[in-house]
Length: 131
Image 1 (cartoon, rainbow, N blue to C red):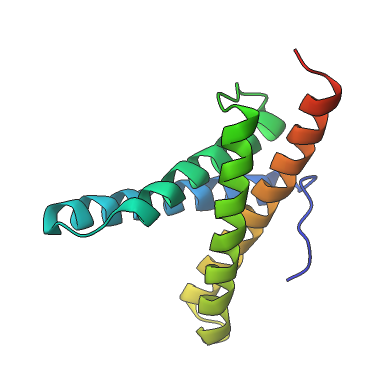
Image 2 (image 1 turned 180 degrees about the vertical axis):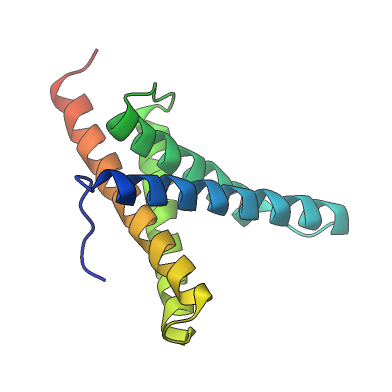
């Protein structure tokens, strides 16, 4: 998939927001199950925080909602999101063409890439306009 534009159509925006919310729900479920079983939850917690920040940055840009994360938190979230993109791309490569799973992964990839781009755009804005 090529780089995704933050200047997406409203339908694409809604799909990306829904995909990020779905990813958050999936990570929350995984965190709950892992906590109950006593597994190490560090990676899931990092990913959950990053996807929440990714959703927040998309909502900031597309819906003018407040963005509660510091530049440092944004930078850390960006690193984790880039790692998630790689993981989702691997799953995408193994998925069957035309399957519902592939569609879900396409939307998740688009949303994650848009979140990274939006984080970059917001960081550039914050660097030139510190309020």
